[in-house]
Length: 315
Image: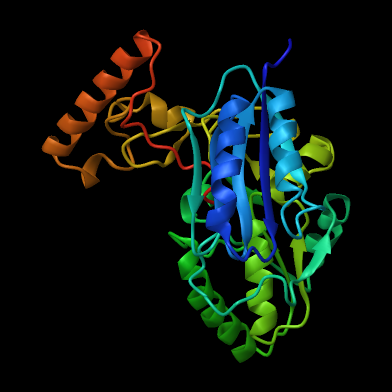
């Protein structure tokens, strides 16, 4: 089966002196090439996920690689039978992934990169503490065997959690190697730089993130358990980056397993078992009307303006 849509997930830390000056040309090229998705620009670099015709994606990546310090930018590719995004956005941000540490420079002192083929040996070492740097709803559907879940609701919470965890380990007299991972590698670039800035010496992270691991490591050799949440309409992927079994609750943005989708509290676009008790009847009525409008727009072949996208915000 041929896949007409190519998806490229990318990020690169570099110093962009004037991100606002880059935005118009980048957006214009994306629109001209039929590309949709989200790209974030900040003084610290670029981050995002785009999708469209293979030639169009290649043209956008060529332009991005011409930006200062971006010649070596790598993208992770996957395929889809249908466009996973509704529109194209190029947004200006203070950080391309928000940690809330304005003085942290990810270009200085990041941890040691570990290739997917070498990751199993590192995390199987009993002297290694393995930390999942993603948010709680992502960890919920899959992670590496034995990894610590910080139970953070956003990446901003990670620094405080890490300091507390480090103090706990030091109180036990332990100074272990630390291995961190995330979806595509961007949060690990920051989290390992943060750990190094805090004085931790032996810090490692999975090069290319979970997505690269699932792409390159055969399922029979894998230490990954479950599926990996992604920030587009696929919702989750498994080994070989094949689309997973999860859906997305449009009310609370949490991933839903097949049993969740079979639950009586699940109504597409309105509620799910995780948010049913968090919302009022009035809110659910509003979501139901939004869902009705989206269905009407879809039947007319249009994009509903109220539809939300989170692609590119994390990786």
